[in-house]
Image (cartoon, rainbow over all chains, first blue to last red; front, side, top):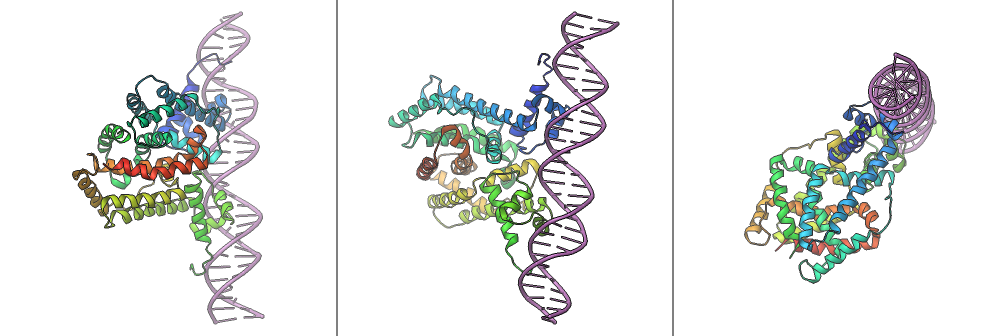
Amino acid sequence: MAVRDTGTEQLIKDTAKRIFFAEGKFNATTQDIADAAGVARTVINYYFRSKDALFKLVFKEAMDDMKVRLDEVLLSELAFKKKIIRFIDVFLMELSEYPYKEAFMISEINTHGFVMPDKEPSLALKHFFKQIQEAIDRGEVKKMLPLNFMLNLFSLLAYPLLTRPLFKQMLEITDIKFEQLMHERKKIIVEMLFV
Amino acid sequence: MAVRDTGTEQLIKDTAKRIFFAEGKFNATTQDIADAAGVARTVINYYFRSKDALFKLVFKEAMDDMKVRLDEVLLSELAFKKKIIRFIDVFLMELSEYPYKEAFMISEINTHGFVMPDKEPSLALKHFFKQIQEAIDRGEVKKMLPLNFMLNLFSLLAYPLLTRPLFKQMLEITDIKFEQLMHERKKIIVEMLFV
DNA sequence: CTTTTGTCTGACGTTAATGTCAAACAAATA
DNA sequence: TATTTGTTTGACATTAACGTCAGACAAAAG
């Protein structure tokens, strides 16, 4: 089975990801997804058996993607600061496409108690934390728990894109203004993380 | 009408807020809320007519609360840095109780297109932005758009609590370790925002 | 004690969302 | 061309969530 590749399976997954991660509609129905993909609703059952199975799959792929993205930076052989700058670029690009990816995963964990597939403490991560500690020892980064450095990095990058619609309403920020803001942030974030 | 105060109306609102804002269960049903509150489901209809009306009310109250909390800081007559430090304390306390409040509001905006009640640019806010600009001119804060300073402040505070369950799973962080992290952050955030 | 009034409950009908299935369809293969 | 095989569709049944309503209940007023 699974011989003819009509691209429908991938189309459904991509559409689901767009609705969940890009549009932030966490409680979209199978009908919503099918409509957006331009297919009949029952095709979802044909390829994924159940709505829950599709969710679990998309969830898992999102988690894996994040792990890959993280490891790509953590394992690169760049100097620490260069590594961080590169990470900011990669992460910002990803976030611009899927600003609600993390939020969706958190929502799923809270509502359906989804759990990570693999439970290794991630070898690459330990190495990265060691690198952070070294940067702290060199005086390149302020003294703090390495994990807090990492949290700072993610916070400064992800939060503004996550809360974009909220601030847009509360502070009446135009899209142009927002682009300005995000452009300036790249430089600011590096300045805040180091020295 | 509305003479006898059995506290049920408030109980339902509080329970809904707990489920939405504290437990992060964005797609909870009226039955979920009723069960958690220990009342019959139809009481929700009695007091709020419809599920949607309850959502809108809770949503509005959350928005108003946020505005009050913001203004309380923005309008205080403290020196700028003291003002920020005080804000961090207040905001962290609030976030510890309702870490998903913002995320819920964003989710509602995306799914149901909820809109802010009042659309004034907020007088207090303009004053605060002016204060930020003054701090920048004094060299107390790095040169940046005042709005970016504000985003940094919110980011560093809110994001870690928002993504707590995610990092807990990915990095195997215990609750004790997390408390350590958050305690250290207070100091770090001030250090990062100023100088 | 009786009546009124506000609060709560359970039964019912309606609607929306999901899943199953048989049949239609189209693309390979014989 | 005929057949097989994988894909797609629409009709149907099942389930869950929501809202309405009549009546039960309890507290205040008479």
